[in-house]
Amino acid sequence: MKPVKPKLLIARAMFPDALARLNEYFELEQNQEDRIFSQDELAERLQGKFGMICTSSAKINRDLLSKLPELKIISTIAVGYDNFDLQACTEHQVMATNAPDVLNETTADFAWALMMATARRVTEAEHFLRAGEWKKWGVDSFVGVEIHGSRLGILGMGRIGQAIARRAAGFGMEVIYHNRRRLNAEQELAAHHARYVDKETLLRESDHLILVLPYSPESHHTIGVAELAKMKPGATLINIARGGIVDDAALIHALRYGKIAGAGLDVFENEPRFHPDFLDLKNVVLTPHIASASERTRRAMVNRAMINVIAAVRGEVPPDLLNRDVL
Ligand code: 8YV
Image 1 (cartoon, helix red, strand yellow):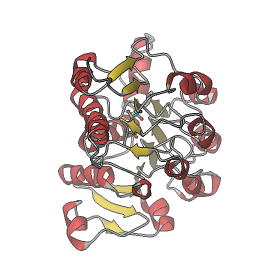
Image 2 (cartoon, rainbow, N blue to C red):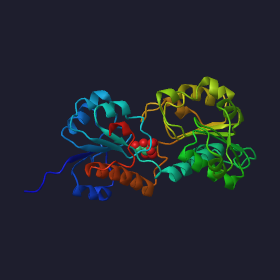
Image 3 (cartoon, rainbow, N blue to C red):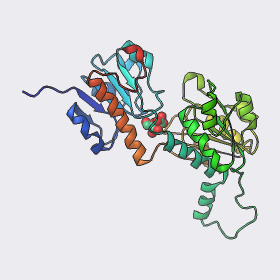
């Protein structure tokens, strides 16, 4: 008789060929139709499971965990894990892992794409052209704000923030940043001589401000009415971090009344719904949470999540364990 393999839920559709390696260790239940499970469905699907590979759409809270005595590991393919209640995981003896590092460069590229599209009004100009409105060239048509030689501000200077800063070298930009913890001198040098400033200075002096901090109750509405009022009128605000870090209603107001020049947003409050008033604004570039979306990187994220569940089933410590207390 073949030994019974532990069961693993793949909560969202993921590259099936990449997942094949898991068959050696697990009996897989895949959600290839990619339906988002309700909390009740998730509880049902996770009954008797050893673990789950999921994305940021799975909310792992105390209520869910209390129904799952056999669960050992939840492994997200994301670097952000604000959808996990880590304390509840530890209390229920569930390991929680994320997928750091593999998406740093791709996500940094996208922050730049959004910043450049916003500053140079790329999507606004394309919509104009597609709508058949281009009748003549104009000296002041779609004039934007400068990128090269300007001052780049970064709020949240972790690995992705540092990757964004390094790219500023090619554009002759000065980099300032604020973070809970100041980088050491070597890290600052590598991050294109990034200069540590307080949050107030960052808001007041950035020409382009990129948000890369993790979401938590403490970072909720880090950028609201008061913070937007401190920014330069010609500044752009780029959010590739998480919805909820920016007060979207306050941002809409600031964009509508030209308090800042524009915003580039990959994340929103209440995704995948978002504030409908964004659609009426021309000075905002909107993308559906795709900053890490290159095929190579998405595969690397899935692979990292697989490494964590395989380590767990082999009785090893998963390399990206978030709640070490669980051991
Ligand atoms: C993911 C992300 O694509 O890694 C993160 O934290 O936000 C994205 O890269 C997404 O959250 C996957 O669930």
